[in-house]
Length: 528
Image 1 (cartoon, rainbow, N blue to C red):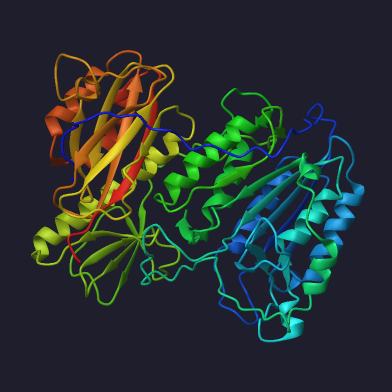
Image 2 (tube, rainbow, N blue to C red; image 1 turned 180 degrees about the horizontal axis):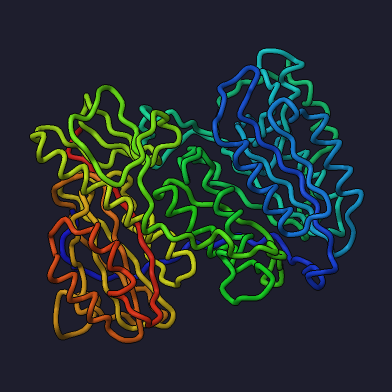
């Protein structure tokens, strides 16, 4: 649980690197759209994945909704080096000025010492279906960032959207709980220079002239130092970046209501959505372009961006035993890859589909365990509802203190901003659905403790980490005028297991006035 609001300080938001100026495409109906989507679950010689094909299918479907003239889908054993290069050259050969070409890859990545000594120490690589670092022929089945750069530089007219839902290194912000069957999109590979049949090809290509990439938008799932886990989203294993990008192109990121997704909308949406859905494990990298870049939205824009999660049941898997009591609002599943929550009956721990331990019930009686587990399910239903609401709303709430897994005695620090609203309500959802009011906790005065923020300014606050340990999610709601009904409800239900009631009454308590919304999760443990 989190304690009361305590302090303020300045916070700098994530910045993005610009590689050059984009040439904006012409009117929505003029430019053609081409797409190449690659998804590899089934690898011949390295570990398989579960969600990469789901990602590629999703992106392909959205491109077709956008009215794409041609979309090529390569899955599993279709994803060979020869096929990818052939289809890429064919699509870019058809594209002209004002057109858009999407390249989307979901699968394993890795890195090796750079073939060309220069400004980068490592080459990042996409590993294809037949990749095998033990043979010369198998080592050929990969794409290296240097040659990709040269391929993109050859297309000077169309705008290229290059999306990589993969990772190139094995570090993590928090460890993945391996009781969940989901995988990481990183595969360690060692390719000796003697077996590397692409080495001479890369040396011959030489360094890439990055000034030739002024028409390229690069979207990466994470920086080069982090591992990318697959997660359970809507009952399917997925990559968070691909899911978030698909929803953005359907309209979830379209704040001004036009037919275009501009670069600011895309950056804001992906930065926030990926960070939240991965439970702070991922920060996407978006490089290139200017504010003039626009992507035509799906012609079914918004169709799936604001689904009502109020009645959503939670997919619950039970492993290492059975439950000896009944729970409500769940859909039992034996598949941990698709579960929202997984309960380990032997260890008495609850694990999220993001592979975090969110509750430890060791030492509880059966009756207390049932109540707290039911509370956790209701908390997750409410959180799913809040996630859906926050797509279109305007707060920015960040966890800035840097700890990845908090311990007793730590302090979590947050930064909150809203460009318009002055009044704010902050409350925490503990792992078992307990609601804790954080602001306003004072009737008068100034600052967050009194429920007041300065529009456009970054306001910060800190809170100690106290029992019970597990998952907490802080929710910030801002508005032009105080939301008295919600304040009254939170005071009445403070420190009560009331997530289910808040889910039912959310729209009534917030009324008709506009509000900003954001949320951020953090995890703590008392175990060494």
